[in-house]
Image 1 (cartoon, rainbow, N blue to C red):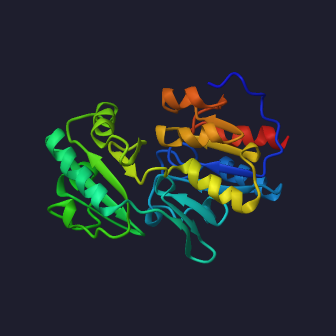
Image 2: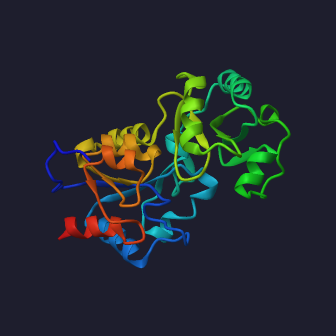
Length: 270
C-alpha cells in the first residue's frame, strides 16, 4: 500500500470504479448501501464513471441500477461508451496482423490454449473457451482466426489446466509487448492494443472534462485495476483485492461484501 502520499481529503470531482469484486459481489448486484453512496456522491457534484473489464454488451445495463453516470469505460479501456447518445467516445482496436500472429505464437508455446475475441458490442470464442466458462450464448468458432477480424479490441486466452497466475506470465513472455496484457477475476488473460488500459481511458476522458488525476478517486480489486489506482489522486483497493493490487493502492478498504466502496464515500462526504 502506498505510504508516501497524504490521506485523501478531496475535493474529488470524479469517482472511477471497477464492477466485479468492487461494487458488484457474487450475487451479481450492488448492495443498497453502495448504490446509496454512489447516488450521494453524484448529488454532491461528483461524476461516477464505471471502469470495467467487461465488454459493453455485459455492462451497459448497469449504470442506471448503480446510480452511476452515463459514461462507461469497458473492455479494460479499449472502449469508452456514452449511454445517453449510444455512441462510442473512444474505441481502440488491435492490429489484425498482430493479434493473428500472437494467436499463432501462443499455440506454439502453450499447448491446448483456447481463445475468445471481442469487437464492438459482440464476441465469440473457441469451444474449449466457451465450455470452461459455461458460455452458451454464441455458437463457438472452430478457430478464432476465422472470427471477424476488423475492429477486434480484446483477445482472451485461457488454458483448461493452467491457473491464471501461472498462465499470465507465460502469455506475457510470448507476446513480448506486442499487446497490453492483464487479467482479473475470470481465468483468462486479457490482451488489448498497446497503451490501452482503464487508466489511459480515464485520462483521456478527464482531459476532455478538465479534470486532473488528483481530482479522481478510484476503486478496484484486481491486476487490471492497478494502473487506474496508481494514476488516480487516491486509489483504493478492496479488502478482497489481489495482494499485488493492494500493494499499489493508497488505501485498502473493507471487502466488497462489507460495502468497502460505500465506507470510503460516506467518510469523504462527512
